[in-house]
Structures are given as structure tokens and as C-alpha cells.
Amino acid sequence: MSNFPFQRLQSELATLIARTPAGERLLSEPELSRKLGVSRATLREAMRTFEAQGLIRRRQGSGTFVVGQTPVLESGLEVLESLESMAKRRGLSVTVGNLQVERIYADQELAEGLGLPLASRLVCIQRVMCANGRPVAYLVDTLPETFLKPEELPNDFRGSVLDFLIARGTPLTASRAEITAVSAPADVARALEIQRGDVLLRFTAQLYTAAGVIVDYSISDFIPGHFNFHVVRRVGNGKAQGTPEFSQKWKER
Image (cartoon, rainbow, N blue to C red; front, side, top):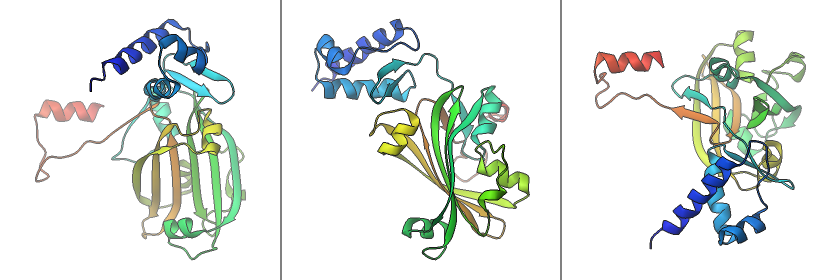
């Protein structure tokens, strides 16, 4: 079965979005589906492509808005770094919002993630990270209370647990992360000003000290289109392949 009708729909949407000034609201889904002659389900599927690119944003109860040029945060996955470091490299302004710091007790997932007994006392740090005023990521870090107490966070805490621990002198050595695509749950969707069920890029990670102790179990949800993660890998037996010019270009990136 040909997907030409769907491609035509995406082309028409691309034209409509390009002609709409940034910040303006598109027609409602019922109006747009009637205008384009497609079902709302088909329209919604096509719209996800542009939302993933960061060209539009759907706000619950308000409608779909054209975003315009999207700031993209780029990072290689070989080295762990904070969003603040990524943004600084691109000259973007990053702020933290909806910061919540609370004491909780470890459930099964957190106990396994941190290698602790059930009901261990933990500190949970939740916040929304915004790039140039736009919500782009929802971050949740959970640490043992024996390692970090809420009152230890500075008043000017900017959202990066990693940067705080490094500045404190914690001997961190490695992070293990699982990367998946997930549907945004209701609370995360509200915080990021997107629709429930929209696709997010999720990093579930554990941060280790030099002694091999897990000190941070984090879940980070990123809006696709605002991030470009990449990996540089060696080929075959581990020996560097390619020309010196190629290697130098990667070093310069």
C-alpha cells in the first residue's frame, strides 16, 4: 500500500507551518483535519513528526503553536556532561524551573537502581530544564540521604546534580545509562507543556564513584528535536580506522 497520501499530508503541514509566524497558534485539530481531509488520528500522527523536530508545540488546553527555529543541544555520549555544559558550548541560556527537593523512601525500583534495601531514606530532586525559555527536559535524580541531604544544595542551585557533585569533590568515575523512547506520562507532559503520550527520549542512568558505589539513580526525559546525541565508535578490532584528516575532524567537533 502506497504511503503517498501521508507524504502529501506531511508536505501540506510543512508548508502550513513554514507560513505561520513563530508563536502563532495553528487551527484546532478538528478544523485542521476537515481542511486537510484526513481523520484526527492521521493528522495527529503526521503532527508528531514536526513536534519531534521542535517546529511545533502542543499545549494542553491551548492548542498547537509554531515554535520557529529550535535551539539544539548537541553532545557525544562518550563523555557525561550536564545540560548546562552542553548549552554553554552552544551559547544558549539554560534555566531551571519547577524545582522540587524532597525526602522519600526507596520503593522496589529505586532500591534496585541504587543497590540499597527497601525503604532506605533518599533525596529526590525533580526539575524542568528550559533552553532559551522553552522546556526541553524533565529530570529526576534520586540519591541516598547518607550521601546528600537537601540542605546541602546551595540556594543558587542551577539544576545539575552532576556539576554540584563534581564541584563538591565527589570522586565520580562512570555512568551507565539505558536509552529508550517512552510516551510522556501526564505529569511530565504538563511540566514540559506537551501532550500526554507524546514521544520522549529517556535516559535511565546510574552514577558511580571510584569505589564502585552508586550515588545517583536518574531518569531524564528529553523532548526530541531539541537534542542531538551521537556516539563515536572504533571499528572491528579496536584499532583506529580512517584517515588522519577524519580523526582530526572528530577531535575538532
